[in-house]
Length: 190
Image (cartoon, rainbow, N blue to C red):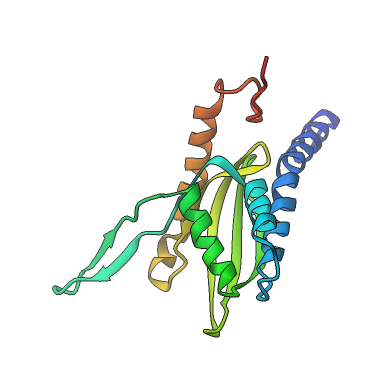
């Protein structure tokens, strides 16, 4: 049986999860709203939404590239992480091309870790795709995101990949502790 103290602790933990992720979710939804396929947002407004969503030290880890070798074996080549500036250029290009973005799901999978799935419709090409990323947040912004491979070949290991991304998030937070004045990643000038 759950005691009153246990129930109160769980409520406090849930409240903390909500408080930590709410500014990020709000910034994400505002950012996604820019990708309505019409490209009717000013570059300055797009930059503001990007800045609200992504931390100044943001890093994006794309999924590994798979290729069939001549011997019939699949080879995996790791892609280099993208910097914040490279992500901005890529996203600005998508916006300019009239890409439409929709949020499929937004799930909290840890204190500071969010599982996000987006639907993309490329403007002019009529091609659709989905992107799944696990994002670590700090101070209400994305500080690192890892793209998750959802292809049929990798579905056997999908839970393992999601857990590895979540563990990487915990590792990042462990490194972050002690870096800032608080554990929320807020720098104060004292």
